[in-house]
Length: 165
Image: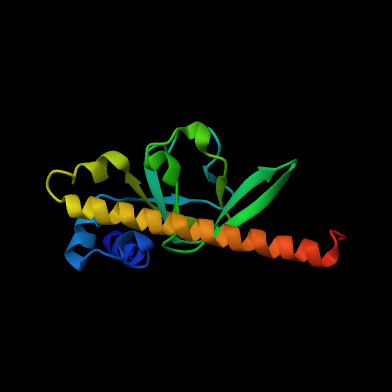
């Protein structure tokens, strides 16, 4: 698939562009870079500076977000095409705030958007920036809702079993 088609298809499948018109998606798409990762490669991990200030959008393949809880790696989420990663530093947070490791489970393609490239639209097309940031908030809210539901499910399970495994 040609790079431009991959970018546009991925963006159309993402919460990032839900409120954008086709012409605005094309304008935004021109700001992205496509990067290939081999299975087993970390895209992000705590303290990582390499992709600092870049938003990652999964285009194809399988990517998993994990976190160390106690002494074990716990799977937080298996990303689907269109899902986002790297939100914390993209939104201005520090790399020390990253708690998850994002690793390619299979060979994959991701779209990368540097914050400075999105910010370059502030003077000429501020609505695109506004709607993209709303999309990031919606995506983040979905993550929080999913994690809250999983927490309630686990609490209910523990209550029903009396904490016995």
